[in-house]
Amino acid sequence: MLISISFAFACHLAMVQQDLIVGDGTVDGSRLKEGVTTWEIVLNQDQVIGTVKQTIAAKSHEGKDAWWIEIIQDVPGRMHMTDTFLVDRTHLRPFHFHNVRKHEKSVSLVYRGSQVQGRITKFDGTESPISETLMPERFEGNLWGPLLASLPYRQGFSCTIPFFQYDQGKTQLEIKTIGKTHVPGPKGDEVEAWEVEVVTPKGNRMTYYISDTHGELGYRVGSLTQRLVQK
Image (cartoon, rainbow, N blue to C red; front, side, top):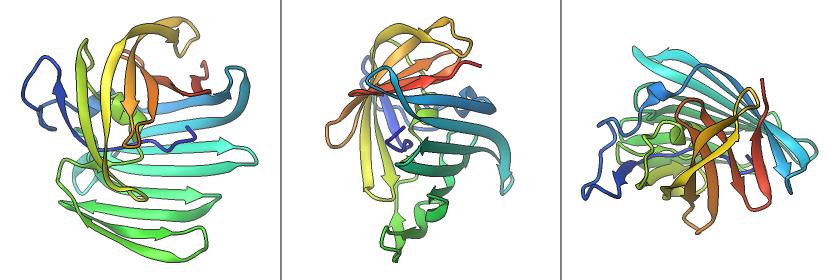
């Protein structure tokens, strides 16, 4: 994932006229599973340029069940970045987010109620505070894969996802199912997956592959593919 991935939201189905509210079961954190998953970052379908390693572990935070999620993106000679999240295990609302680039802390955020506060270290080494008031349903804006894997896909599903991202502020994604396809699964066999189109605020489009059984299997954007490494 050359693009860091995560977010926040209230969803609606195309066949339903009213918005579904986060907390009504739209986002279901129980769809995630503990474990380690690795993907290859592939350019032009055959050139492996890096890896993504995702670890999910069950934790607790102030008496609440939580998921601790670490995503390490490594493109040798270009980028080494670690995103660490602590989110509610039920609905994936964030508690903490930390970003480390080239082994130096870049961003640290704490979410509490309708507030997010923290600091960002810019490329020139200067630090700036972050303090925003958010709607409670807003999610952390760098956790796309696990959030996408927590949605209840079906034909005609679509949702608008408002989130907060440290370098973009309050923004949103548009999500919809394209249909079903088959892609390599964790053991190398072809498995059925939803093709999920994600549209960014700038109009960029990418396609995620989400399995009802195996969760996030990878994505495609332009000439770049994130491909699951078989276990």
